[in-house]
Image: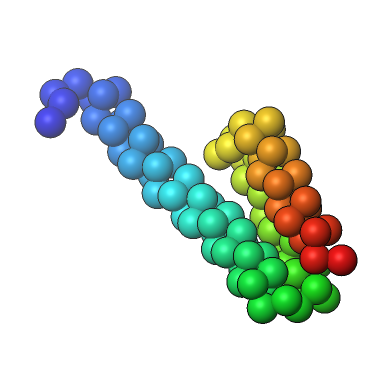
Length: 87
């Protein structure tokens, strides 16, 4: 454990941010799984709705600095391609 006050604070702040980022990443993964579940069920309407929700969740994660913008763009693009293949 650190002895210096500022180092102790950094440890606490890092833990707090790590927990927040973990929760946000978990939400993104859940949203992506819902899209793929709808695709596997051949439910096009549900897949498009889940894609819209997943896109929103991923954009929010990007704006909060959890994911890089190119990573989010790539994930959204790949999900969109998979949903559009259903049509």
